[in-house]
Image 1 (cartoon, rainbow, N blue to C red):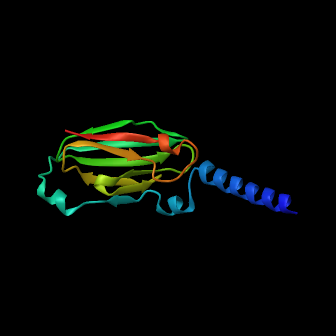
Image 2 (image 1 turned 120 degrees about the vertical axis):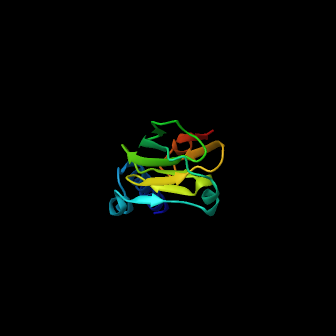
Image 3 (image 1 turned 30 degrees about the vertical axis):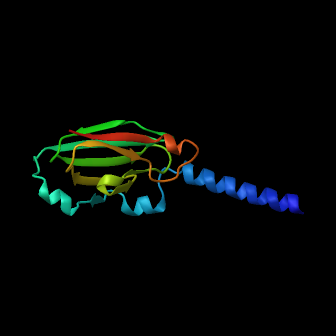
Length: 138
């Protein structure tokens, strides 16, 4: 009896893990598809915008982003759109308070020079920790 219960629990966990990784869109993503997230901070108000817009469409699949680097200059507006080609993924950039899911766009003014990591913000499976890139601001 214990073996059957243990097997059932393991099977249920496996099905849940595969479902989370194999879907190309979650119900939340379908509900917010095509929306734009404008994330700005009070610090950005002190940087004079250059008027330049750096647009990047990042395609995500298990387990990589096709864009490894996004380059911009201080004062540029960065517009990142995430497209999920396979699996359910997100992009997080902690320094700019960005957390978007597939089908969403984040737009923000970069206010400081440096290299800022971006990463998959949805736990998507075994290769999740390899999904990363850099926002490079000069």
